[in-house]
Amino acid sequence: MTPQVLYILRLADTNLVLAQRLGEWVGHAPALEEDLGVANIALDLLGQARLLLAHAGRIEGGGRGEDEFAYLREESEYFNLTLVEQPNGDFGDTVMRQFLFDAWQCGVYEALAHSQDATLAAIAAKGLKEAAYHLRYSGGWLVRLGDGTPESHARVERSLRELWPFTNELFDDDETDRAVAAQGIGVLPSSLLPAWSARVDETLARATLARPAPASFAWYGKQGRHSEHLGYLLAEMQSLHRAHPGAAW
Amino acid sequence: MSAPDRVPSTPSPELLARLHGILSQVADPEIPVLSVLDLGLVRHLHFRDDGRLEVGIAPTYSGCPANAVIKADVLRALAGAGFEAVAADVLAPPWSSDWLSAEGRRKLEAFGIAPPAGSAPAACPRCSSERTTRISEFGSTPCKALYRCEACLEPFDYFKCI
Image (cartoon, rainbow over all chains, first blue to last red; front, side, top):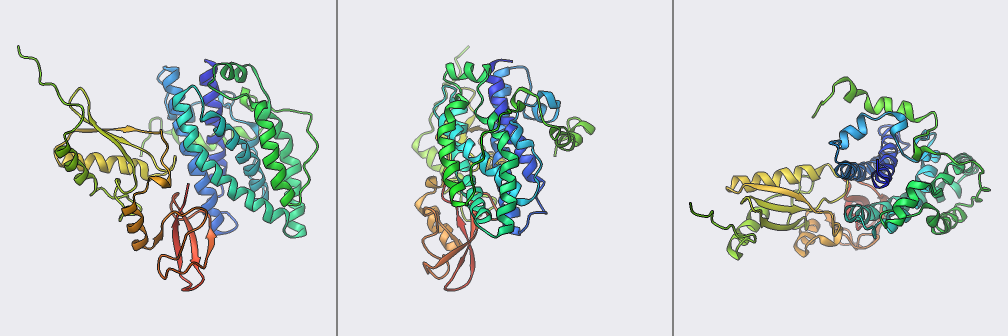
């Protein structure tokens, strides 16, 4: 697999897994408006994932399309960031995960809109508009919860503490990242950290939350080494396709 | 053996007008007062070397389920008029609410949906009051948010500005 294909699969898988997680809220969110909100965000992320998977398949040229990638790969062949496979928890956990992710995705899409890969640039330019809207939603909720009641503050503070260690991976450069950055196709993750920190710090301050100390451990979901949660998610997402190969609506 | 007739790649102005007439009748499945032309979704119309008509269509929101329906409806309408057409996805430049035509904005408002106007609707589409409150950033479709008018107290949809 070339660095370009792997890089695009990382982006696609991160979106796909988060869309699946957000979909778990449908029918269960705290209010109808939030049910619609998370479902709409999931739909945008899924749409972007489909474009990215189809693009990866075309470049790979081995006949794999979006369905083969989504439904017929094992856990270790998924390259999503570990953050997005974490369970939904309570609504505050979901908001925190979404906020940390949205702030990162805005930076990624801003950079990739200038990619030498024209299709990737087009997907990013389109996705950026959607990601900015998501960030407004997740950031708005984070401020309401953090600067809300003592109960909501304490709970979302715990969410921040528990999810923070997963953000290390978002800015970790590996060989694939360096290869695609050198080709002008991808963006070096570490270069995104200053802008992300500024975005996150500004909202955390409004949410009356303190930024946690840097965690010393990094996860490597983007290299196929995942937390224990991804396997269960994939089992549910893939069961229909695996039971009925080639099933179509 | 004679050479096959060269097929012009760009439709003549007369043909283009006819194609636009056909496409102006293809409605958005969720907001039926808007045609695909009002929404600014048709990016090009030209003939391929094999003689088939290619329609460049921009998706609205990346994951909007209406994208597939719109594509199928466009091809069906053209086939009904005798055109063998194929759809091509056009991602760049990305669609945004800026692509909505002036006529599309008027139709939206008349239908009861506030047209895109920055971070909040300019006025209630029913009573024109500027006193509006956001109920939800996301509405019944990816392109809409939900608002309430504080003057007439009616809830209304706002076509999101992205």
